[in-house]
Length: 124
Image (cartoon, rainbow, N blue to C red; front, side):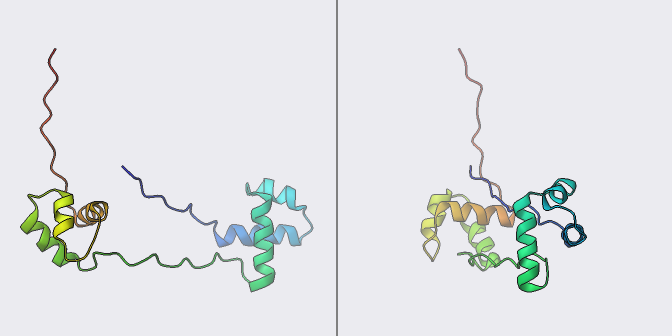
């Protein structure tokens, strides 16, 4: 199963400002990066961003692409009608072309769980 990967949290603006203030006060960059437990490259990027934009705040992230299943209430109704089918069969019935993986993520988003097969213990 594929896990959703997320970007690590950005450093706080307070930490960024303190690190840049230490560099401005005359501390060596390598020493500042050790004190604040950041990489030297990160510190250099912050200095560059401060010079270019006047701020050390991280850039705003762009929204991802719109999902293929936009109306979740219509999707919930569709699932209630066709819940006995497999994901592949429901994906084939959906009005727009979608993959079974897309359908599975949408099912998870609305709180539906997949059917589980009864697994009997193996006998010897």
